[in-house]
Amino acid sequence: QVQLVESGGGLVQAGGSLRLSCAASGSTFSINTMGWYRQAPGKQRELVARITSAGSTNYADSIKGRFTVSRDNAKNTVYLEMNSLKSEDTAVYYCRAVATRPNGSGDIFWGQGTQVTISS
Image (cartoon, rainbow, N blue to C red; front, side):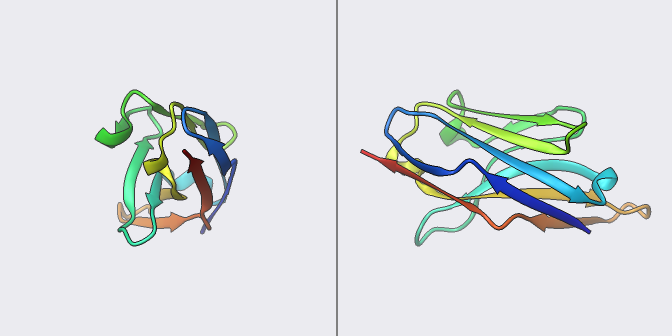
């Protein structure tokens, strides 16, 4: 099992910045990909950014150039640096981890979510 705890959300004005953190505990040795998803009111949860244990990254087109995902494997923590924030970035941001079992199958774990609100 893997437990994920997010922090760093809050209220910020448009154009501002926030940094989210997600610390993993438990069977962290099995974690491969970690990432961030978000869900705005009335919308489906969507990928924001993700990073593998080797450092490969993927970003949603809507945040490319503004957000940066990074990871400290020694601390089992993933970060999301968010700059030039827009009102449409307002959402609950969820940390997600994919852990690989010895047989190759994967388990998905989610954090509890952290609210990010951008005021215009």
